[in-house]
Length: 243
Image (cartoon, rainbow, N blue to C red):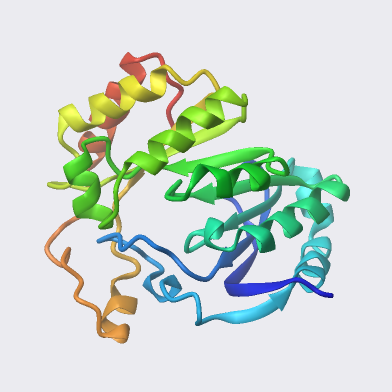
């Protein structure tokens, strides 16, 4: 029996979701409702295209030369990939059998027991932590922060290489105490290879309008270079490698 799942889209030569040139599978379905989401059309798991693991691996193999040359691999993003744990486990399992580097881009909002079997076949986790202050996290995502922090601690426990991703949003996630709290938390995780400070952008705003969703950040502008530099400096004070 072929294992299938719901896919939002594919990107053949991504360069920002893990090391090297990567084939990226964007899965359908997400339990978060982030205010700045650039893929709001990922929300509903019943939408999207159904694809089999075999067909996806066949697509990945077409770009093997680029991945091998650049030290890249396969990244599964979303949406939230861990909403389809059996499906992505099979994709990762096949990729690992072929010697392809695997990365999981996740919000961490999942029961730990659901994530554990998937992580056995993951080389690198890109963990998005939207905020450290619980109230701000809820305001951004409409879900609780605790599952994400629990997963972060488990990744340290199993020594899983991890990159932390933090989106800097003016007047939302940019309070100094919020960034400092996250930096202090991450500084105790010795499996974290680096932190990525990602400036807020509005490239997905048109999708919200097309879908008839209420985009509440119309008047929010991307952070200035100085604001990004300040956020990076806070993480660096905790001896973290920052990009």
